[in-house]
Image (cartoon, rainbow, N blue to C red; front, side, top):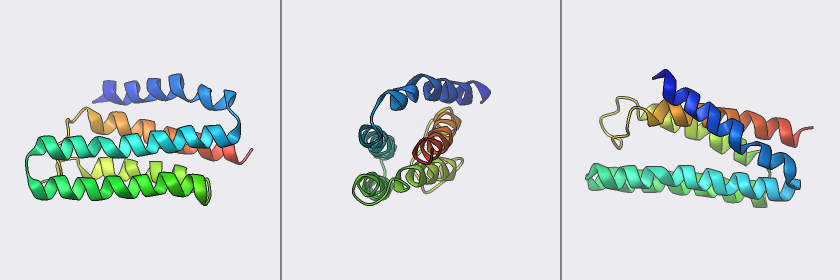
Length: 128
């Protein structure tokens, strides 16, 4: 599963420079949209899984990531990298999980690498 991790890193390298071109408020808005979208990916995995309880669980957790995105905009920027780091943990929770949505094995390392790199980048960007 090395290739998906490298693809996650490549996606990070390609997308994060946009934050350097934006004003901080716009950069945080982009990060919030990103967090909400990647949190929402699991809604699709939950729907594809076919188990109603899994779908509702994934939807509930996606709403938590959406709330973290809003909190990053309205409360404090730190909610955004925290949400990304927590999303990486959520990705890892799906590795060989029985009661969570079935996720393609390639997606987990891909997303963990992107989430953690993006979280660290946002911390560095907002504390400089």
